[in-house]
Length: 125
Image 1 (cartoon, rainbow, N blue to C red):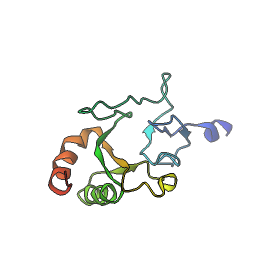
Image 2: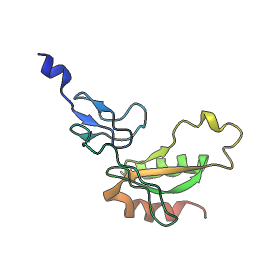
Image 3: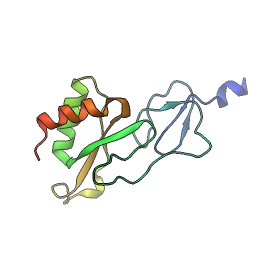
Image 4: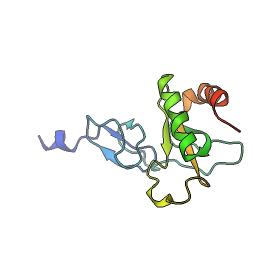
């Protein structure tokens, strides 16, 4: 019985937190969980170059936009069937700087090119 309570259903690819079966999203990072326990090397996150998205497990950054535009564009991507998130989603520390700060839109890596095509239609340069 204790084995069932301690069984790992998934882990966050960003922070490495492990979750019991039944959870689909990290409570802190708000990204989809990957199946199974955290790999031995831990979560994968590399800094982004100017032309390279930042890999985060099986997620990738489409691009960065101001706060309001990033939320609108993420909503557009979700309405087109792409699981899109805004990072960071907690902007409480950015009070007064929302117009000058960029927020990343994160999508599953296998949908990155499609998300970039959609973003190019709607996002302002």
